[in-house]
Image (cartoon, rainbow, N blue to C red; front, side):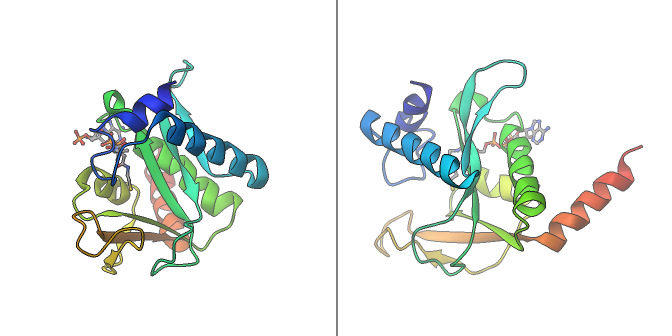
Length: 172
Ligand SMILES: CC(C)(COP(=O)(O)OP(=O)(O)OC[C@H]1O[C@@H](n2cnc3c(N)ncnc32)[C@H](O)[C@@H]1OP(=O)(O)O)[C@@H](O)C(=O)NCCC(=O)NCCS
């Protein structure tokens, strides 16, 4: 199962407390599927265009932990290691943000990750998200845990609209 392989890959899971077992991965897949069936949105499967290869998940989620932004909707991503470095997370993230602002009419979307997750932070920046400078200790981790300190990025609906306007103006 490709999702289980992704969740068991220590390179992909470097900035999570642990990689997932097959059972945990299947459970996560089931929860993602159930949430999409119930609400119409969530962490979607990402496939390569024109092919059916599953390469990971990107999407929107309502964090269950109490965070400095709560209540909030986050955007997140997890791709197979072999598909990093090609812009796929940014492409799928743009689609997810479009859905958030144009279909769900949200006012804001946030993203958070552990301080050291440079690749994830770069995706946030490429999507036009800004660092709120409201770093926080993730409530699922003990304060001394090396992954506990998180950054919080955000994009507002007006920020999204401005970027879309700039894109439209620069398209011949
Ligand atoms: C976070 C993660 C999704 C980022 O993947 P990524 O491939 O680095 O991100 P993008 O899809 O935006 O691709 C950007 C890279 O593709 C390159 N690229 C090529 N074409 C591109 C395009 N059209 N648009 C944007 N970037 C492009 C960029 O130059 C950049 O390369 P570089 O990082 O080697 O400099 C990935 O590292 C991952 O799945 N990590 C594990 C899970 C994780 O940590 N998730 C976040 C938890 S909060």
